[in-house]
Length: 298
Figure (cartoon, rainbow, N blue to C red):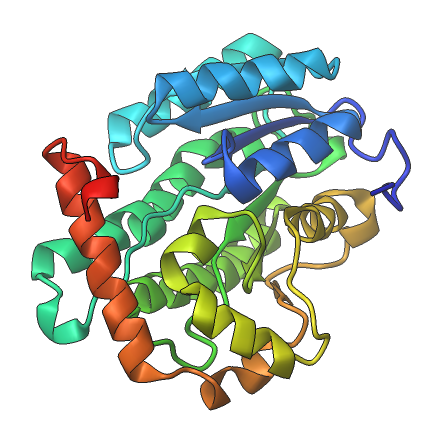
């Protein structure tokens, strides 16, 4: 779809995106690039990074990819520094890296809980912490008169009410939203930085939707959603563009729900048994894939 923003909305900006090589993260990368930004993407899978950078460059977007795990302090530091070395500065950090799976709380191991918390919540803080000195007013490549940079933390609407078999992810997303508010207060006051968030609901053509909502539940759910349709990655990217650009220059400490009012009706249509059966099927396929069993055999 055609963007409602000017093509130069982010002209001259440099953005680093974790999880920016696929899904919602890649759509944000592409839209930021189409609106004038230079793009650095960070991820754990080299093949995905290479494909994303190639796709961005084919659109005429200056882009570079860096392998790294947001759970590792040394990776976060290295990637942030490499981005600044490559482009000369850093203006925008988008934390879109995430991990998730369906599992009942009684079947969720403490290690599984910790893994999601580490990727989503701890990883978000780690990236913010390492990017801080470049994003703050007067940071490298940034004059005191130009003000500070911007951070966008991608969470979700899972924890706004509750969601079956998502205790780990809901806790992580709630932590991200809380972190967004606290950093906005501290870093906005002292360093002229803006920190905001986006909480997507069900977004089409994403791994999250495929993992978390079986087709039979989705078909029934969409009939009850306020807007009677599913969101697109483009919708989230436009919200990100708004918050990162001058259009959102007076927005700070806000997490924007991008779900079409999905959370308003969610509690009415979640059949527990269907979700639980789906979670078991997903888990079986994941375990089979880990040991090389074709999913067609399941």
